Image (cartoon, rainbow, N blue to C red; front, side, top):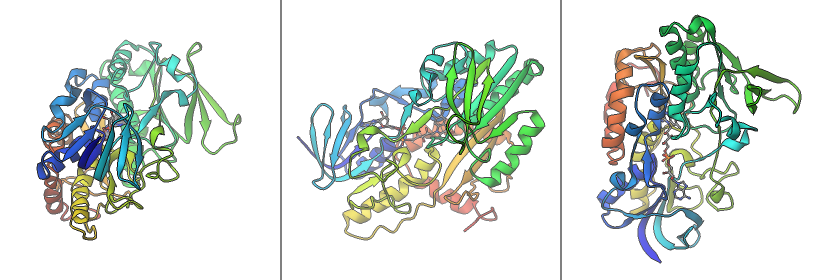
Length: 415
Ligand code: FAD
């Protein structure tokens, strides 16, 4: 049995950042439960899939990124008993806590799409959602000379809602600059009713696709991959089972797999009916258990699940937790800030930033962020990877708040 003031479950983006900040404040009183020995910078996987970065640049030893002032329990959470303030790991360690921070991400379910696991083993199908496959995406794009390149986006919860279209645009640009574009059709099939959740940016992305000859099909959800005949089977969203199937043949297929909350949380008292940890959308405090908090992909915060969102959630989480420790009401407010740097072509990014309402919530003064920008490419490929490892994972959160307040002057949706 281990007794801890604060336990953080998960050492990914959110858990590592939270544990770093908390262990600076409460040295030797924080434990992190995390089974993996490698930490992945997932936002960089898009750049690996497009041949911009090497896979090695996206990963570091977990031991090197977790804060040294916290205790790493190298195991997985099995179950939590929030009524009695303890949890049990899969190797049957019991950890008692005063405060619990849930940051265990979500789970990817490749087998939720029929035939996908087998198809991913063929040379024609890949996904940037996997550290073992994102480099394959780039191999596929280089090999493809002609035919149909098909890109998908599913129903259900998805981390980084833009990742499916980022690789679509990067592929289309690569085909064009290498003279292959005339022989390749580029199709983006999304289960959503619009190309992007935030209308402000969708308004700019839709004409760009039309102009570049990217066929966008709305309301199509990939349900099966028949790898023998290289067919992707889509269901029209909202249609009756078996009816309204659309079958497309592919020469390259990029899949955003189905994603779901972790099964080990399903029967716990921590989750809502969707299976995500049930927290107050403003304060990140659990709706029932006052000493429990969540941030990142495992939470039910109704915003797009991104590392950028974690960077805005972190200062709120820290303030809320501090308030509860001091027996005050948590007052800090998270507005749903999230960001999606859409790589529209090699050398250009559209920096989408928005809040719970899908309203723009932008950082860069004097810039129309709906325009594709070279500066934002620099931000995405250099500044953000640097700040991921050296600022966010170190738990330095307040930096995110101050410059944004200043920079939002004169911007759309300025509070
Ligand atoms: P994760 O970072 O996934 O961490 C979860 C951790 O929990 C893992 O370390 C895991 O091992 C651990 N865990 C799992 N089960 C257990 C258990 N039982 N017990 C204990 N620990 C457990 N975000 C952006 O901001 N910008 C982008 O451009 C961007 N692009 C992306 C592109 C791709 C292809 C992908 C996949 C993601 C992208 N994201 C982007 C999203 C971003 O990576 C995630 O939203 C972010 O990493 C979420 O952090 P997290 O800590 O909640 O989850």
